Amino acid sequence: MLDIKFIRENIDKVKKAISDKNIKMDIDRLLEVDKARSATTREIESLKTEQNKLSKVKPDEETIAMLKESKNKITALEQELKNIDEEYFDLMVKVPTVPSQDVPYGKNDNFNVEVYKWGEPRKFDFPPKSHIELAESLDLIDFSRGAKVAGYRGYYVKNEAVMLQMGLMMYALEKLIKKGFTPIIPPTLVKEFVLLGSGYFSGRHYNPEIDEIYKIANSEEKTADGTVKKEDKFLIGTAEPAILGYYSDEIIDEKKLPMKLCGFSQCYRSEIGSYGKNTKGIYRVHEFMKIEQVAITHADPEESEKLHQELISVAKEMHEDLNIPYRQLMICTGDLSAGKYKQYDLEAWIPSMNAYGETGSASNFLDWQSRRLNIRYKDNKETKYVHMLNSTAIPSPRMLIAILENYQQADGSILVPEVLQKYLPNKIIKR
Image 1 (tube, rainbow, N blue to C red):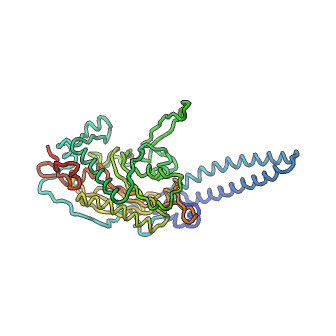
Image 2: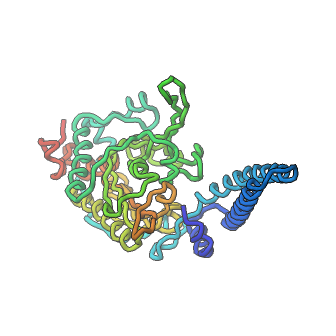
Image 3: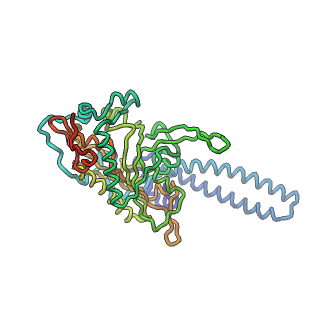
């Protein structure tokens, strides 16, 4: 969410951001509602001031009538203000962050720009197999029973693939801890405000037709007397929103900034917008594991930009440690979500696709998320909203695909990457 004062003073920049990001919203209507909100608030305050003056006067019939009339007016205006507020906040949550000046303009993901590439795709001297063929022949993933038990895109990870997947998670955690990140295992079942605040809803409330989030209706005991409250909960798609929610409605000690955290979580995504895409294997699934990097820093664009580069560098280093060829993309305006100031994606080489496939992204939101979640710090007695950033460290399914396919041998076995061999001491997966 942007500061309304910034919106008023930079309306042309905001309108351009709305257009460049392909966002559907009427910013002029927001300004109209903002004026109505301010006028109604002033009128209520004026009536309350007059009411206070009248209440101090010795009551007579005329004064009592005036107080009653004033009370009725205030009640009506407060209801009007409540209705105005509903529209105001519905519009405010859709206002995007103005992207960084170096973000390339583009209508969609076809206009994303490759800014870095590392490693050369492997040239096989035998017909390479896909991760699906390798996983089935080595009994590493069971797709048919996964679908039977969990439904479409369900899967079981088995045997050495379990240690390979868990090894990836431990390798990433150990590296991040050495780099000064605080490890966290957050809750994966969260309240609505967490996902609204971090920007995982398309609007102010959950929209099941657009938002790729699983909602769970849950009855919980509210008090010791046994009264029950039904409350909607949501499964997170990454550790980021739960970690950010940790500090909601708090003022962080400025001395603790910048903060670097890394979260391990199971992730859940409905993938409703990906019908017909990558339907086979584990490239696009509903449930997986991931290590996420999260950073919280001062309200300083230069400092948050420096931290953004650090987060993407860590993710790049992990690809290089695993010796997986990859490329880095700068995301264009048309592929940049509402809250993001700047974003980079990393894509690993997937032999069976003969192309690069996304393995993560690194995003800088500036204070867009912190305003929604009300996370601040004090700087020389001035309270400011922190800047917030996140980056994928390691995702389990797609990095597993990259390892299986890039490390396969002519006899159908899989070599274990050197950095993961302590988790699989046999150094080779075969049957």
